[in-house]
Length: 391
Image (cartoon, rainbow, N blue to C red; front, side, top):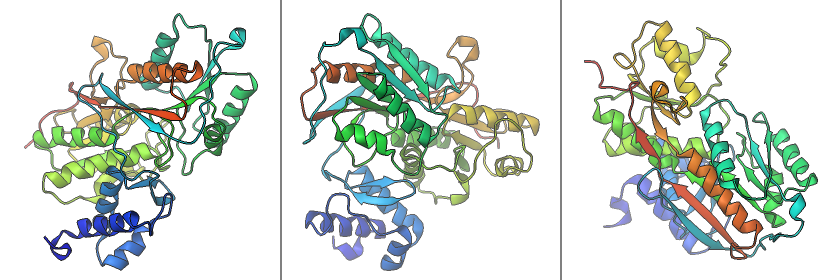
């Protein structure tokens, strides 16, 4: 088949693959902006986005929210999850950076730092539970710092953790348009750290995360099977993260596979949500009131609870009138609190595995010059908040 007969988005992919293979584009070179590619190839934005999403999925490029797309360090790298919420795959990636190893010296001062954006839901609590469980019996006190989802506070937290002499860090990065240079400084200096949930595409680090792409696709596949065609996906902040991009990309891929056009109006990621009040002038409230969607996929559990609250205030029944499927379980996990259908990321296990990787690095059990990536496949849990679409 000739290039001319290939779909337009495939032609764009092949164009960049050829330029990368020929070394015209090198590691971390920036890909032209979407608007420029639309003009260059005379195509729509959706076509360009589909091409870039697929290139990123195959490892040719990485996307930085708010900054653009760049050529990956290793364009042939591929990391895949495995079946089951409790399953994962690890990959060692050789690099030139030294690995910091403290061994057992200074035993009396050994401690580990955990940096989180906030504790506002059960996701964070289950993550802490996993970390704590893995440290049981280990001689490492745990220091926890909350950044209030502030990039500046995150930088300060890292600096203070280093000042008190922690031997390693577990970091759940905050929402931000750019990388935190303090985290990149840790990598440059070979200090032991593991990223949780969010990662820096194109930059090799120890990381434990859930596969957001599969999660987004899984959510749409389930709702589509139950008759929903107007499926909205929404976040509660306009700050872009790679996690949001991955989940939206999975959402788009599922719709594409079901042979339907992607409606940009159903991708609700361009507003902030104030959980302290139920604002009837808010775009999300008006969207729900106008029955724009029969199902909502929320990118965190807290937003799912908020949407259910809005629906009930409007007299809409869940799931008779509206289905709500959340990422992460908003409930405690107790039987009487298990009402929300959700994409489970097995956050307790995520905390356990991240802590084990960190201990291996600190105590010299991880091979020098290697990083470990653990990508966990999410699991769909069906409860009462979703059902078949009303006819």
